[in-house]
Image (tube, rainbow, N blue to C red; front, side, top):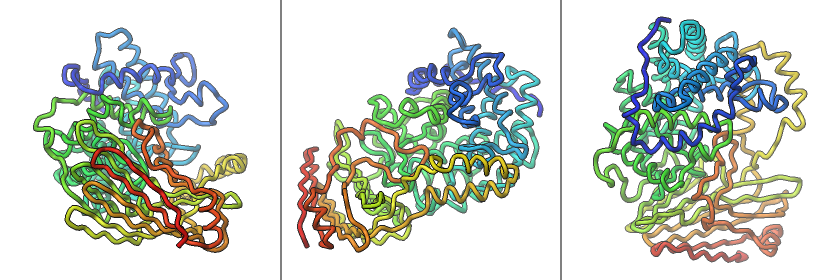
Length: 574
């Protein structure tokens, strides 16, 4: 792998960006995560639970090594500042430690040893290769060669494997393979990339979104856009550019007036908006500029899920996207309203409905059985009302929820002049609340020790684990029929609930914010989650009616023309 000219960051380019303060503010946290002792065998390891606490985990997660990219960008953004050289040296150490975590077949693990994770291999390969490109000769001949060889092994492994169930993983592989091809000059990586592009395009819905466990998730779509834009800036591939523009046109509908984005109505419940791809696309997409303006306001007001709000596992992963956006930021052109969606839009494929009225912006998750997010519009927009679904506790420790992804959900949508009527029905599904390693830690580790050498077996096992934790749905006999009427100034929701035989309710709630799905980068708190109306709990007499087999009707009315919420709930035996 020959030298390439260093792709150093231009400090002047991102000097006025809205990201610098956030990235700088997180640097002390990153530096506390990394082993900074050059004599330590784990020098450069960013997994503090592994190298420092030593009893929390028996392997270092490669995902943490992506922090190297943030260190290099931070150093190059302010090369004159004290400590810049130390950041570069720690980044070099992080690259070296990443190489030690690679499996012989070229793959990397994500959550447990011998996993051979497609996403960990793709995402870390991109971040490490981008770090190497930015370092250039500063990496040194020995490290450049060592990391380059590890990247080529990772690239060959990615070329032999695929992941189109979660398409943002494929987008990450495309960006990684683009960089590996640029570093190595080997045409086989260009062929791998081209094949991955074909896979990705085959899994983009005509509405613009990419499949995430079969459905549309606006937040994860922003991650796919982020990686595809990184590829597009170098490849100029018109097919990728067209796919990006189509995705961005879909995304604008899910930027809320307060700048928050995504939520429980998506297929994976995630609430973040990745910035780097938007910055790269801002020059040619009004939709990207509209999303960025909303993100800038949210960052300024603290109304977005940012890296500063995340745990150790995901702080660095998200922060490097903000660091890249910092480096590539340029002032926006156009007007505030440019790219803004208007009116009502139904996305039947995604199972989503959006109503942008004069007073409120409301999103309904049809494929999530009527999840509702409503926000006021105007000078000071804010979260108005939230309904993340019903949650129920039954005897024998069973927990059920209506908040599950139902690709075959039964619903009817009837648009009218100034109003939208929605009718849908749902049977609750059992919520996976298991903690499998509490009982199975020793057998699990014994299995990994005995069979971890078998790559195909471990890949099959990983898919089975994800199916069990994420995709399996077992019905529980609580039926919910919902009718909604969304007008310009008011929303009415009428639910009819009936409990079938075989279960007994001990608690029933409707939650404004609770999450039901097992998704690693979800359930992060954001200011819009605090104090929003929507929580309700069934009183004892309501539970008694349901347990006797009676139907119960729950009526909720929200008046939002004046930015206030008036919510009345009645339990009526039907």
